[in-house]
Image (cartoon, rainbow, N blue to C red; front, side, top):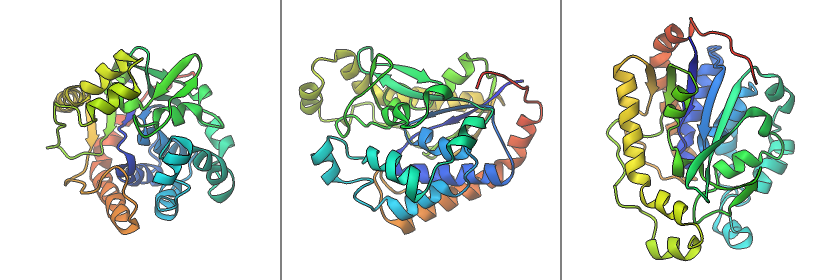
Length: 290
Protein backbone atom coordinates (compact mmCIF):
# COMPACT_ATOMS: atom_id res chain seq x y z
CA UNK A 1 0.00 0.00 0.00
CA UNK A 2 1.37 3.40 -1.00
CA UNK A 3 0.56 6.43 1.17
CA UNK A 4 0.97 10.08 0.23
CA UNK A 5 1.20 13.22 2.34
CA UNK A 6 -0.54 16.22 0.74
CA UNK A 7 0.10 19.75 2.03
CA UNK A 8 -2.10 22.74 1.17
CA UNK A 9 -0.57 26.22 1.04
CA UNK A 10 -2.10 29.30 2.61
CA UNK A 11 0.63 31.86 3.27
CA UNK A 12 1.16 32.46 6.98
CA UNK A 13 -1.72 30.11 7.76
CA UNK A 14 1.03 27.59 7.08
CA UNK A 15 1.91 28.04 10.77
CA UNK A 16 -0.84 25.45 11.26
CA UNK A 17 0.96 23.00 8.98
CA UNK A 18 4.19 23.68 10.88
CA UNK A 19 2.51 22.47 14.07
CA UNK A 20 1.14 19.38 12.37
CA UNK A 21 4.48 18.41 10.86
CA UNK A 22 6.32 18.93 14.15
CA UNK A 23 3.94 16.45 15.78
CA UNK A 24 4.66 14.00 12.97
CA UNK A 25 8.41 14.43 13.45
CA UNK A 26 8.27 14.11 17.23
CA UNK A 27 6.26 10.90 16.87
CA UNK A 28 8.56 9.51 14.16
CA UNK A 29 5.82 9.56 11.55
CA UNK A 30 7.45 9.64 8.14
CA UNK A 31 6.05 9.60 4.62
CA UNK A 32 7.84 8.43 1.51
CA UNK A 33 5.64 10.43 -0.87
CA UNK A 34 5.02 14.12 -0.18
CA UNK A 35 3.16 16.68 -2.30
CA UNK A 36 3.20 20.38 -1.48
CA UNK A 37 2.34 23.71 -3.01
CA UNK A 38 3.29 27.21 -1.89
CA UNK A 39 3.57 27.40 1.92
CA UNK A 40 2.95 23.65 2.07
CA UNK A 41 6.08 23.03 0.01
CA UNK A 42 8.09 25.42 2.20
CA UNK A 43 6.98 23.63 5.36
CA UNK A 44 7.85 20.26 3.86
CA UNK A 45 11.52 21.18 3.45
CA UNK A 46 12.35 21.24 7.17
CA UNK A 47 10.13 18.21 7.82
CA UNK A 48 12.08 16.20 5.25
CA UNK A 49 15.43 17.41 6.61
CA UNK A 50 14.35 16.39 10.12
CA UNK A 51 14.64 19.90 11.57
CA UNK A 52 11.76 19.95 14.04
CA UNK A 53 10.72 23.47 15.12
CA UNK A 54 12.73 25.16 12.36
CA UNK A 55 9.54 26.32 10.65
CA UNK A 56 8.29 27.59 14.02
CA UNK A 57 11.50 29.57 14.48
CA UNK A 58 11.14 31.03 10.99
CA UNK A 59 7.66 32.41 11.44
CA UNK A 60 8.16 33.43 15.08
CA UNK A 61 11.45 35.26 14.61
CA UNK A 62 11.44 36.37 10.98
CA UNK A 63 7.96 36.87 9.53
CA UNK A 64 7.89 40.41 10.92
CA UNK A 65 11.32 41.07 9.43
CA UNK A 66 10.91 43.31 6.35
CA UNK A 67 13.60 41.25 4.65
CA UNK A 68 11.18 38.30 4.73
CA UNK A 69 7.88 39.96 3.80
CA UNK A 70 7.20 43.61 3.06
CA UNK A 71 5.71 46.15 0.70
CA UNK A 72 9.22 47.59 0.46
CA UNK A 73 10.41 44.31 -1.02
CA UNK A 74 7.51 44.38 -3.48
CA UNK A 75 8.44 47.87 -4.64
CA UNK A 76 12.15 47.12 -4.81
CA UNK A 77 12.19 43.63 -6.32
CA UNK A 78 8.69 43.00 -7.67
CA UNK A 79 8.04 40.30 -5.04
CA UNK A 80 6.43 40.79 -1.65
CA UNK A 81 8.59 37.97 -0.29
CA UNK A 82 12.32 38.50 0.05
CA UNK A 83 13.21 35.21 -1.59
CA UNK A 84 16.91 36.03 -1.77
CA UNK A 85 16.89 36.52 2.00
CA UNK A 86 14.65 33.51 2.72
CA UNK A 87 16.65 31.05 0.64
CA UNK A 88 19.95 32.86 1.12
CA UNK A 89 21.01 34.34 4.45
CA UNK A 90 18.14 32.79 6.42
CA UNK A 91 18.66 29.27 5.08
CA UNK A 92 22.45 29.35 5.15
CA UNK A 93 23.38 31.46 8.18
CA UNK A 94 20.55 32.48 10.50
CA UNK A 95 18.59 29.21 10.64
CA UNK A 96 20.74 26.88 8.54
CA UNK A 97 18.89 24.32 6.48
CA UNK A 98 20.38 20.83 6.65
CA UNK A 99 20.99 20.25 2.95
CA UNK A 100 22.76 16.94 3.53
CA UNK A 101 19.91 15.48 5.59
CA UNK A 102 17.42 16.63 2.97
CA UNK A 103 19.49 15.00 0.25
CA UNK A 104 19.77 11.72 2.18
CA UNK A 105 16.08 11.48 3.01
CA UNK A 106 14.36 8.61 1.22
CA UNK A 107 11.39 10.68 0.16
CA UNK A 108 9.67 11.29 -3.15
CA UNK A 109 8.91 15.00 -2.83
CA UNK A 110 6.77 16.77 -5.43
CA UNK A 111 6.45 20.55 -5.53
CA UNK A 112 3.66 22.02 -7.64
CA UNK A 113 3.79 25.32 -9.53
CA UNK A 114 1.57 26.87 -12.21
CA UNK A 115 2.77 27.08 -15.81
CA UNK A 116 1.59 30.53 -16.89
CA UNK A 117 1.55 29.53 -20.57
CA UNK A 118 -0.96 26.70 -20.09
CA UNK A 119 -2.56 27.60 -16.75
CA UNK A 120 -1.89 24.02 -15.64
CA UNK A 121 0.10 22.60 -12.75
CA UNK A 122 3.58 21.19 -13.22
CA UNK A 123 5.40 19.22 -10.55
CA UNK A 124 9.09 19.02 -9.82
CA UNK A 125 10.88 16.20 -8.04
CA UNK A 126 13.27 16.19 -5.11
CA UNK A 127 16.30 16.24 -7.40
CA UNK A 128 15.06 19.57 -8.79
CA UNK A 129 14.58 21.06 -5.33
CA UNK A 130 17.98 22.11 -4.19
CA UNK A 131 19.85 25.28 -3.42
CA UNK A 132 18.65 27.89 -4.35
CA UNK A 133 15.24 26.17 -4.21
CA UNK A 134 14.00 27.70 -7.44
CA UNK A 135 11.08 25.28 -7.72
CA UNK A 136 9.90 26.21 -4.22
CA UNK A 137 10.28 29.90 -5.02
CA UNK A 138 8.09 29.38 -8.07
CA UNK A 139 5.50 27.45 -6.08
CA UNK A 140 5.33 30.33 -3.57
CA UNK A 141 5.26 33.22 -6.08
CA UNK A 142 1.84 34.76 -5.61
CA UNK A 143 0.07 36.34 -8.60
CA UNK A 144 0.28 40.15 -8.73
CA UNK A 145 2.56 40.15 -5.66
CA UNK A 146 5.55 38.24 -7.01
CA UNK A 147 7.57 37.95 -10.18
CA UNK A 148 7.25 34.97 -12.47
CA UNK A 149 10.02 32.40 -12.10
CA UNK A 150 11.75 30.81 -15.08
CA UNK A 151 12.77 27.21 -14.41
CA UNK A 152 13.43 24.17 -16.60
CA UNK A 153 11.83 25.75 -19.65
CA UNK A 154 8.70 26.89 -17.80
CA UNK A 155 7.55 30.31 -16.67
CA UNK A 156 5.93 29.75 -13.31
CA UNK A 157 3.78 31.20 -10.53
CA UNK A 158 2.06 30.03 -7.34
CA UNK A 159 1.21 26.32 -7.35
CA UNK A 160 -2.06 27.03 -5.57
CA UNK A 161 -3.49 28.65 -8.70
CA UNK A 162 -3.71 25.41 -10.67
CA UNK A 163 -3.61 22.75 -7.93
CA UNK A 164 -4.26 24.15 -4.44
CA UNK A 165 -4.78 20.74 -2.78
CA UNK A 166 -2.81 18.22 -4.89
CA UNK A 167 -4.60 15.13 -3.61
CA UNK A 168 -5.76 14.04 -7.06
CA UNK A 169 -2.18 14.27 -8.28
CA UNK A 170 -1.07 11.95 -5.47
CA UNK A 171 -3.84 9.46 -6.25
CA UNK A 172 -3.03 9.56 -9.98
CA UNK A 173 0.60 8.82 -9.10
CA UNK A 174 -0.55 5.58 -7.48
CA UNK A 175 -0.97 6.57 -3.84
CA UNK A 176 -4.36 5.10 -3.03
CA UNK A 177 -4.26 6.33 0.56
CA UNK A 178 -3.27 9.79 1.73
CA UNK A 179 -2.89 12.04 4.73
CA UNK A 180 -4.03 15.55 3.82
CA UNK A 181 -3.12 18.66 5.81
CA UNK A 182 -5.42 21.61 5.14
CA UNK A 183 -5.15 25.18 6.39
CA UNK A 184 -8.87 25.92 6.27
CA UNK A 185 -11.62 24.48 8.47
CA UNK A 186 -14.27 22.07 7.21
CA UNK A 187 -16.85 24.80 6.51
CA UNK A 188 -14.62 27.01 4.37
CA UNK A 189 -15.33 27.50 0.68
CA UNK A 190 -14.02 30.15 -1.67
CA UNK A 191 -16.31 32.57 -3.47
CA UNK A 192 -16.84 31.50 -7.06
CA UNK A 193 -16.01 34.99 -8.29
CA UNK A 194 -12.29 35.69 -8.38
CA UNK A 195 -10.98 38.00 -5.67
CA UNK A 196 -8.26 39.32 -7.97
CA UNK A 197 -8.96 42.79 -9.45
CA UNK A 198 -9.88 42.01 -13.04
CA UNK A 199 -8.43 45.19 -14.62
CA UNK A 200 -5.11 44.61 -12.86
CA UNK A 201 -5.01 40.92 -13.81
CA UNK A 202 -5.75 41.69 -17.47
CA UNK A 203 -3.18 44.48 -17.55
CA UNK A 204 -0.41 42.44 -15.96
CA UNK A 205 -1.07 39.08 -17.61
CA UNK A 206 -2.62 40.04 -20.96
CA UNK A 207 -0.06 37.86 -22.75
CA UNK A 208 -1.10 34.79 -20.73
CA UNK A 209 -4.79 34.08 -21.41
CA UNK A 210 -4.65 30.58 -19.88
CA UNK A 211 -3.27 32.01 -16.65
CA UNK A 212 -6.06 34.59 -16.58
CA UNK A 213 -8.60 31.80 -17.04
CA UNK A 214 -7.01 29.80 -14.21
CA UNK A 215 -7.12 32.81 -11.90
CA UNK A 216 -10.78 33.46 -12.72
CA UNK A 217 -11.78 29.85 -12.03
CA UNK A 218 -9.63 29.41 -8.95
CA UNK A 219 -12.57 29.54 -6.53
CA UNK A 220 -14.55 26.80 -8.26
CA UNK A 221 -11.42 24.64 -8.59
CA UNK A 222 -10.63 24.99 -4.90
CA UNK A 223 -14.18 24.11 -3.87
CA UNK A 224 -14.19 21.07 -6.14
CA UNK A 225 -10.92 19.88 -4.62
CA UNK A 226 -12.32 20.32 -1.11
CA UNK A 227 -15.26 18.10 -2.09
CA UNK A 228 -12.82 15.51 -3.43
CA UNK A 229 -10.97 15.55 -0.10
CA UNK A 230 -14.27 14.99 1.72
CA UNK A 231 -15.16 12.13 -0.62
CA UNK A 232 -11.80 10.42 -0.03
CA UNK A 233 -12.22 10.93 3.69
CA UNK A 234 -15.69 9.34 3.66
CA UNK A 235 -14.30 6.38 1.73
CA UNK A 236 -11.56 5.93 4.35
CA UNK A 237 -8.96 6.62 1.67
CA UNK A 238 -7.73 9.78 3.37
CA UNK A 239 -7.02 10.97 6.89
CA UNK A 240 -7.50 14.72 6.96
CA UNK A 241 -5.88 17.05 9.48
CA UNK A 242 -7.70 20.37 9.25
CA UNK A 243 -8.20 23.33 11.59
CA UNK A 244 -10.74 22.40 14.26
CA UNK A 245 -11.98 25.98 14.14
CA UNK A 246 -11.64 28.78 11.61
CA UNK A 247 -8.18 30.32 11.40
CA UNK A 248 -8.81 34.01 11.90
CA UNK A 249 -5.66 35.35 10.26
CA UNK A 250 -4.92 36.34 6.71
CA UNK A 251 -2.21 35.03 4.42
CA UNK A 252 0.28 37.71 5.53
CA UNK A 253 -0.09 37.77 9.31
CA UNK A 254 2.99 39.00 11.20
CA UNK A 255 1.77 39.02 14.82
CA UNK A 256 3.82 36.28 16.54
CA UNK A 257 1.20 35.64 19.24
CA UNK A 258 -1.49 34.98 16.63
CA UNK A 259 0.88 32.73 14.69
CA UNK A 260 1.74 30.74 17.82
CA UNK A 261 -1.97 30.19 18.46
CA UNK A 262 -2.38 28.84 14.92
CA UNK A 263 0.71 26.65 15.35
CA UNK A 264 -0.65 25.22 18.61
CA UNK A 265 -3.98 24.45 16.96
CA UNK A 266 -2.03 22.44 14.40
CA UNK A 267 -0.23 20.58 17.19
CA UNK A 268 -3.47 19.75 19.00
CA UNK A 269 -5.37 18.70 15.88
CA UNK A 270 -2.50 16.48 14.71
CA UNK A 271 -2.31 14.71 18.07
CA UNK A 272 -5.99 13.83 17.72
CA UNK A 273 -5.27 12.11 14.39
CA UNK A 274 -2.16 10.14 15.36
CA UNK A 275 -3.91 6.81 15.85
CA UNK A 276 -5.61 6.98 12.45
CA UNK A 277 -2.40 8.00 10.72
CA UNK A 278 -0.33 5.25 12.35
CA UNK A 279 -2.95 2.71 11.31
CA UNK A 280 -2.78 3.94 7.73
CA UNK A 281 1.01 3.91 7.60
CA UNK A 282 1.68 0.51 9.12
CA UNK A 283 1.22 -1.18 5.75
CA UNK A 284 3.13 1.42 3.74
CA UNK A 285 5.21 -0.22 1.05
CA UNK A 286 8.77 0.86 0.26
CA UNK A 287 9.07 2.86 -2.93
CA UNK A 288 12.23 3.92 -4.69
CA UNK A 289 13.13 6.99 -6.71
CA UNK A 290 14.00 9.85 -4.42
